Image (cartoon, rainbow, N blue to C red; front, side, top):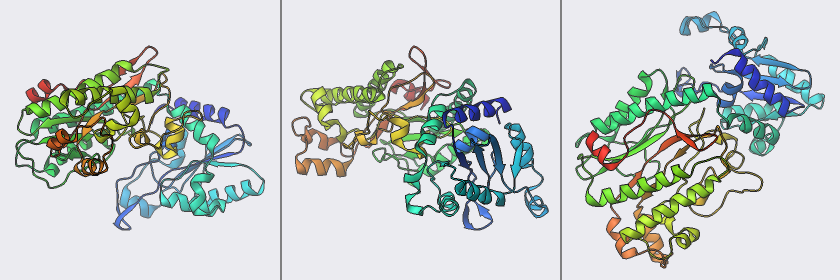
Length: 460
């Protein structure tokens, strides 16, 4: 946990923003794998962690704005529990470390909520992303299960996002720690990949790096020789000469702050001429986006700038043609770049997206697009000092998409399909790094990791 004063200050800021009613924040439960006592790794809810810092299951907290009180709800360990888990700090002791003086048993929460409803108090809650928490809310608040997300408190959502979006120095230190571990994961992949091993064997080494550093993975490892499948997790596919490995991985510290980095490298140690040309296009687009980062700029515009740089490179390669700006405006580049340039990062690797992408990445005046490609841009709003985000352009040659567009004659003014056909078996390339927006620009977070084609080859 951070210092008590940090959690108290966070809750005070929240209370000043949401100034009436009752705020209910749910922690997460344990989840069983295949029978009750065989459990998945526990991960606490990030907003609960942000405001209360207690990393244990089966907790909830109430901030009663009308009656100026804060309560953590949960049941202390019984002797039967202690036999299996050993002694632990009490909930009361942990709550005190977060600056909360009052704890009550779990059963008292339902009674408090019923009284609040009867008294006409507004009960603010965040949209649930786990079925067990959704069911609790439905039962306690007598709200139909399928309507819960639409009934979540927009004032609370906006207040939480406003706070969590701006990273404090202690948070940035944790994020940099996570990125440092993630760099070590990437180096493990780049240095030890070899022809004949499987994707799973390589990913297992990365998993070990994350866990041995005291934390865990911030998301399931994406590691594949089929890099054109955007979120292709490792399988028993064997690495072969001439292929590239796309490795997108992230570590999470024991405080649950995330890192997220991607590198693409050749199995045999050297990029082919064609692979290197495409790699350099992606690298140039990433650098253009990095150079554009500053407070006040719309991230959507940074995304479109990167798209134009990708299209320029593809035009030089002969795969695209015509006016680059017009091609991007029409969405022709999305045959090769179907996703967004980046996302917020913090306590979640896709920070706060459980609260709704429209609230996290957009505003009332800047709405998320429904167009192919742009609809996958999670962040579009103007950047502010304190934001932490990823920059991850890529080029992906998806045979099914190429066939569909070619058959329908989509964007023939901008795409040379005959030349694109020669890249059907290419796969995909992505390069990703994490940045802090500063008062004057941006700063690369974490220790540097080689990313030019030549540097990657030297590591191989």
